[in-house]
Length: 147
Picture 1 (cartoon, rainbow, N blue to C red):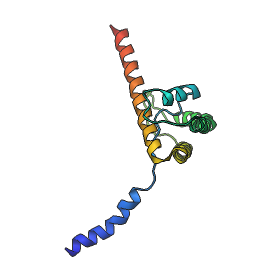
Picture 2 (cartoon, rainbow, N blue to C red):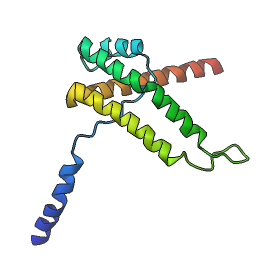
Picture 3 (cartoon, one colour):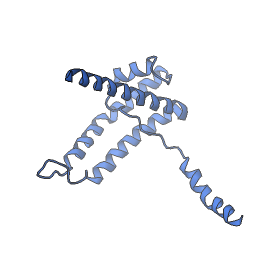
């Protein structure tokens, strides 16, 4: 019994720390322009309802970091070493990947602060659903071209 209590006492802080605020990834948020984002969150497919001010502020945040995000993404792709056969033999520069994560996390955290936990999660699910829908459309087009 003492061992069980000791185990719980030692692991409980780690369990509680793991449940700290940690917003998830907003898939595809950098690949959308302002109009696409606005129409998505205003459509019937959207699981989240946002005010016009929230949408405008989120578009501003994404727009401010979009160029930096794509620049770092391109640098990361260029930093990968390729072998004679054309296959990658290394990974992207860790420093660039760290900078890319920082930019993404700054955007995600800013959006999280605007929306709060519940709306943020609904936005995340909406973006995941939208990316899934777009992927299935591309697959259908590819399959139709092969026929």
